[in-house]
Length: 160
Image (cartoon, rainbow, N blue to C red; front, side):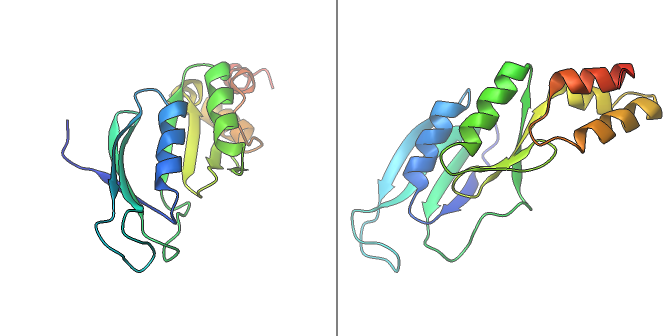
């Protein structure tokens, strides 16, 4: 286990985000809520300042730092999935309630954090030694928002 901790900046919603992640992803939980010992530029004494949580086994801290910095697509969390049901569940949880859909398995939660919901079937296919298979998978993926595993398998088999 590494001592590294991912710090994610929120505009006052760190506790809400951490609770959502804990409910949505396996091996995820909220492990601590820390309140400000005094007033600060974007909050008052007693407000939630930081939230410690684990997402998919990785330790994080959510900082309620104010409106100064936003999440961007330059950083994302890639989540491998084993089935269409799991892919659908995670994708739908992230984009519902204010999130947004992207392309090629990318989506954002309502706090702007980017996620890649990536079926292992796609990852395996993109590692196929046959460049024609990789091209068919790539072309199929480029037409998708949420990844459709059956379509990926059909492209891998050359059935499209």
